Image 1 (cartoon, rainbow, N blue to C red):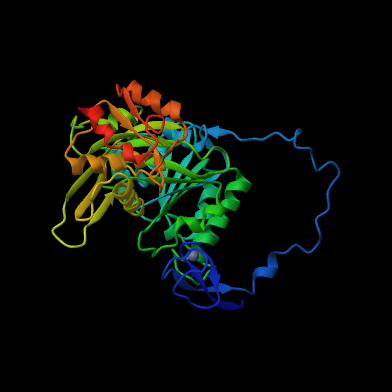
Image 2: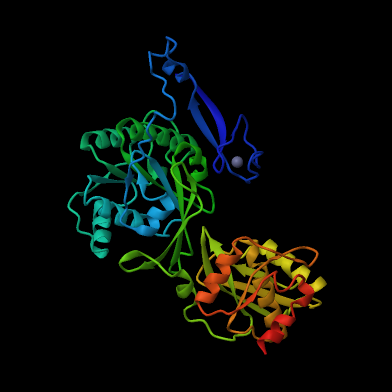
Length: 441
Ligand SMILES: [Zn+2]
């Protein structure tokens, strides 16, 4: 055994011989941790004799039959994100911030799958009592659902093999550690090594395994990004933990598209699917309110109507504040600059607050125009008409740019009774933005 000290970035797993304050690969600050690796063992596993092909071992791709058997999770929105269900024998990483509902949704899925399969939950985070409490709160009653407390990798591999489980959940990958490695649980080497070993077991025994991985803002644990290339599928559960809506997104999927998202609501009975997201997101909306704009954003291949609120008020200090909840702050600064220069509105001594209703994050440039119009509405104290849906990308020269899925957006808006569509087909320039309020009179 030959030990060597190295430094690994917790966010992207870049290796360095020395400690450095800023990661040269992903630019994260203070992300390097010291680790000890065993460099003596590496050569042992190399095979001595070169592999030779047996007769007829290589087949043409047309003859080879893909065996992607899918397991239904019992939750349609979940299966959609996974690509028509969970592929048997695959390794899945479910990531998200602590408290967002990862354990809840995995327990619901485990219970559904246990109707026809042997399901095992291995928890290094919660006691069996805590899991049992959650199961009874969610009213789950499946008999084939087993749970066990364990956090040593070698024991976990043994248990899975012995129990011959079809579907395994490991909560969480960051508390598991191998006895073969000197570093502590949650370090990059441990998390990576454990994942590799679990992957091998999943593939060689055709067992479907789902790992739970925490994303922490302070980066004290090795993040799921470190594992992305080691697993088949990465799904991310996001949302505001103080709000009810949750979005499930595939960040990587070897067995399906990465474009679909699942939308859920956190209830006492667990996460429940939302079939008509637009209706849900607009519920409780105040019609003809000042500073409120409705936009239509694409979540995967689905259009969704979302309300954007802006509050503009005279700044008591010399330096005006810009705050955004659910919208990128840099993007907001740009929109304000464009609105000042081309919309001829003075926001220099105004605080601007943006809030996207429902804890949703608007990441599409198509939402620019709605944010900008909401700001103008609040500044001018003029409401946006209640039948209006606004979308379009705002360019730096004050031009409005067309966005994709135009037909889908219009159809969704009309379905919900929004009959005035303001998009780059109507206006081409920000200079025309005040006309939106004439529509509203
Ligand atoms: Zn890095």
